[in-house]
Length: 498
Ligand code: NAD
Image 1 (cartoon, rainbow, N blue to C red):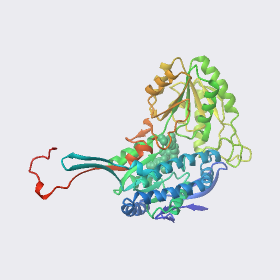
Image 2: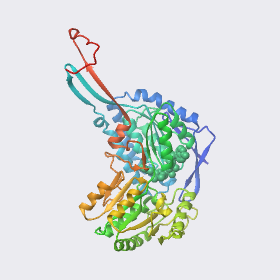
Image 3: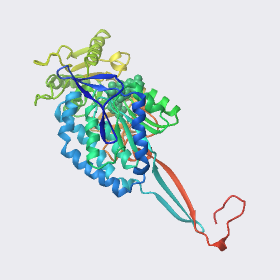
Image 4: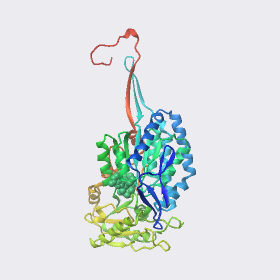
């Protein structure tokens, strides 16, 4: 059995804890490797490597840092299919989707290449006679990143390129369910010339996370995962005095108004609900249709399109949707479809019986479409994180926005309409951090920032973009004066401007 270890000081490091977790190929159900689960001592070794590297890397010139990042960008482009293949092998998403994930991660590397522009400080000359004031931003030191299984490359790339561009060293703890993409990303960074210790990968579970959250040399923690863990990570890391951004789960609503192009809306909803088997934090999981006629017409279109979604392994070039991450998760998702029927929803499509020929042991599930879902049902209340789309019928725009804003989550939302005024009203009124107007998955480009509201993000800063740079640096204001000896040193009074 192949064993996946860690990557510390620019070299692979075998696990020494004696504990391992299983890594599956979700398309075959096969156990393909075991991943080492780091002990607290192994986390300490990675943090020590990072802390040592941070001292010199934090003072490396901007030209040196961006030189490495430009080379990294080229290497990542050259190896994007290798990264995508690892994603498909351990996560199961189809190759086109895996390549899309790498492309969205590359955006942040490209943003990081332009870090000098973001780190330009502010200078005010002659604020008082002979006195200048400069505001600068400096690295934090060691930053830790803890990432989920569903974007094995993109979410790590949201974090470490910008962190190291800002002069920090980084310790990445990827999901133990899909650890290999992170190791390749880190070895490519070493090949690009990133000095040893600046980027380290420790694989592990809650034990490794617990140590990172408590370690005195970790200055900040970026977390992406489910809401209960995000909330706990935020509480624990802030209690240890760290800066934290903890992104949680979601239940994203797409509002369809009666004047929308319903073919366009149905196409968009099917892609956004079932792409990556619904295992996206920005997946549309609830479609809110205003008016019975709108709902009837949409459900008819959704059913026709969804039934045609081709489910299969990444090795099938025609497959549009792959398997779920584990057998246990598949069973959990299927339970929501059965439960929704028992609670009174209309099951328009039930994908729970799907079997993919030749891949009977894979963790596949077909697509499910539930109509007449209400806010009281479990399928509406919980994040299912699978290929299940719920349709909720609302009598009016006001009822729809009240429903959406009552959700405990606030990651993304979308409105589909031809009416600019209605869309504008939705933008202003909806309580989510990211909004799409005729765009179903409004993941911001790299030079804006990604983040939700309410239980979808704990902390003050979104990731990447300007918020990312602020999170990854701390401000310092320098007041300077170069007096002549004759100018004197001033008295005991509080200095005043003159
Ligand atoms: P998860 O919360 O189970 O795991 C995320 C990370 O936390 C992993 O590295 C895992 O090892 C670690 N972890 C798990 N349980 C822990 C515990 N008890 N204590 C400490 N660490 C723990 O999430 P997942 O199943 O890997 O990913 C899916 C979830 O992530 C979904 O809820 C999804 O919405 C969310 N997600 C959110 C975003 C976002 O940007 N908001 C993006 C992607 C995924």
